[in-house]
Image (cartoon, one colour):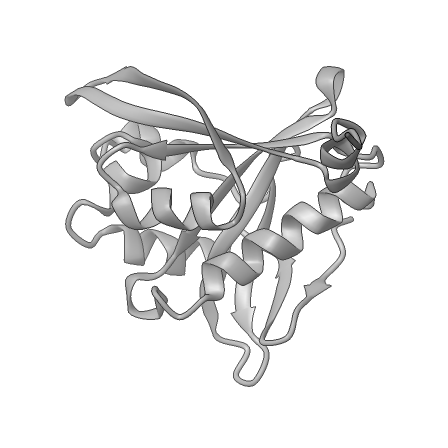
Length: 180
């Protein structure tokens, strides 16, 4: 069972496939949102694959503390063999540029690095961002992620550019430093 994660303005609670998924899919119906979220245009197959309660990805509804209103979601997919996780996030368009994504991403990565998200202490968080999504790339870079690759993904709609970023655990950064 996933636990709630609280921050100054938000609480992240396990997302459900009822109200949360319906709200998320309603927001994705906005122009170009499918492309920026999944690097693919809308398809019935993609729509049917979305599952907030999958045991693979730990999905959290990002909620405002004061109102309980869902603002988006954040999730992680663990890679146990190398103690890493892929992060995904989506803030509904009307709540963007207010610091909610940064606050939710920081809370989830800190929980992962502490070892309380998947039962192991994480070493690296990976984020893949659609190249054209400048606000998301700037956010990830502002949060300390380092660009590690630029590539392409073939989709039904054509080729999409992707940028891959990594964020090492705070301890891993310190271990690599030396005093000179």
